[in-house]
Amino acid sequence: MLSRDIWARARRRNGATARRIVTSWSDRPLFDRVSTPIWQPSPQRCAASHMRRFIDAHRTSLRGDDYAALYDWSIEEPQDFWAQVWRFCEVKAVAPYDVVLRDASRMPGAKWFEGAKLNFAANLLEHEASGTALVFVNERGERTEVSWRELRGQVASVAARLRSLGVRRGDRVAAYIANRPEAVVAMLATASVGAVWSSCSPDFGVDAVLDRFGQIEPKVLFATDGYFYNGKSIDSLPAVRAVAARLQGLAAVVIVPYRTDDPDLSALPNAHLFDELLDPLAEPRYEPVAFDAPLYILYSSGTTGAPKCIVHGVGGTLLQHRKEHVLHTDIRAGDVVFYFTTCGWMMWNWLVSALASRATLLLYEGAPLHPDPGILWRLAERERVAIFGTSAKYLSALEKSGFAPSARHALPKLRSILSTGSPLAPASFDFVYRSIKADVQLASIAGGTDLISCFALGNPLLPVRRGELQCRGLGMKVEIFTPDGRSVREQ
Image (cartoon, rainbow, N blue to C red; front, side, top):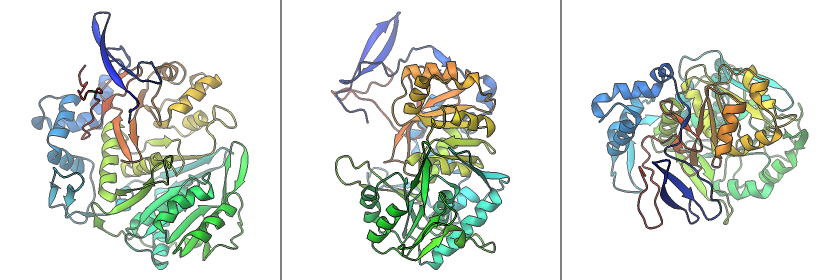
């Protein structure tokens, strides 16, 4: 991903070897292997982590008892490693797999977990969690809760209605929708029937949406009638009508009222209000599919031509997200997990998967600094957020605003702050520990739409160093090379 004339050099500083990555457009050090930790997990926190439990459970397979040994095992023995992730993370399947990995040397062409039959939505919903599943808040202060019981019931209802509309395994369902509970419900309902979900944020223009959805020919389109951003109320219905009119094979449009209670459904083909889909008598029904069956369609940015469709499978998405949530992020049952995202960014898909950890999702819709820079931190305090996800750009903007959350908000439940979207500047590390919370794990993570997950992640066992990503993800053989092809690992 770092490709513009990047080169690495080793140098001596204070008698120790340090590494610096220098680019043609920036001469700032991105990480320094010998920098002093600015945060260290306590022994108690390490011992209580899922990562520590996973290492202890597989110590006989490792050459040591630390993360480095676990990482080496994960890339040297992928079949053993991923089988143990499946077991440790309690993946639910109606039919077991016959073999973990077949044709491992083929890329593409390797086959994972052949024989397994499972359903993505069942893995997120079919457990014993009770209480609150979703909390929705927008910039206007409107707040809604959805219980686990309500979520399961709504998913069952919408899935039944999708079936009645002719949606079957492999069909596409699209959403032009705000980050509301209905988006989560519609996605899980789509997965329940074995169909494929694809979503765009409502701030996308008509042509941008058609460049994406026009390629996949969805049978059903979910949409909000508008959205609120930066103090403005934006009407989306004209854009929804324009999109629906040009989609081939569209069987129905489902509108989620948001700006108004009674949106105008005229000129929309076979239009329904979302609440019309809900049936209190509907029973959950999950279509079992193969491990590599399609689940999501995401898109490349479209900066060098039409956006390219990127298909992600049921099992790969589930297992990667479970690994990242359970082991790397240490999400626990009952945690409130927040990520500032729209439904058009892969972090929305990543966030929703935290339901499998029995976590409560905090969904926010609106501008991150409106009506004032403290809005997200009031939410974090009031909703008792444990995992706070955002972008490097937001943390930089927050610092420039002069707002210091620690001066106004108590955040006793906050354990981890995640940042992605671009490299987190060393100065932003300083800002987090100075102005947000001193005792918090700050994880600068890196991944992408093309894998709907991460190459580099946080780690509950390791210290945080200024300007560094904590570790490479388990099972991800990630290397950095010099222009002449030499790996700079361990320099």
